[in-house]
View 1 (cartoon, rainbow, N blue to C red):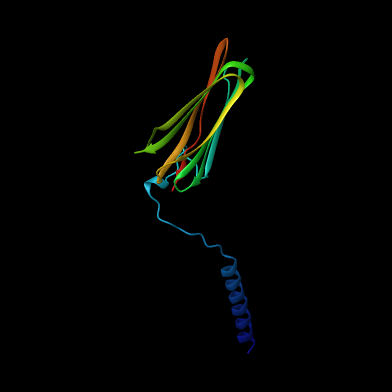
View 2: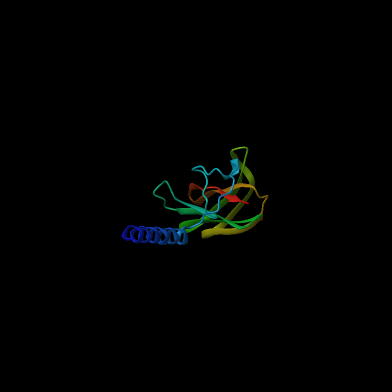
Length: 162
């Protein structure tokens, strides 16, 4: 009789532990991956990416440049670029290159070139409709001219547009 009570108690504890374990388990959805889903060091799983670069020279004119890319929807991304100077410069440059990954390599998909006279900064934000199913990144060229011309470049990681 005593042996049966002991087994009932052990069985009850085991059953309680099993129920507790099944309640606290977290389910993680699993989906088949494709070649496009392979994330390399050039890409991120985030829905946005950015990069900032300071003038390689100890700049008298150019302070820094920054670019950002963000997924807005399944076929739209937002890109942003900024060239920031230390002071008002004769000419400020901001070139934005949207790059698309095809066959494992990035190449320019679209580009925009902005220039302004007698300003201390230049920025632009653009929303772009793009085909889904691949990675996109932004490459920026930032420069300031006030006598001499100083420049730097930026490059975000790629983000997947699904």
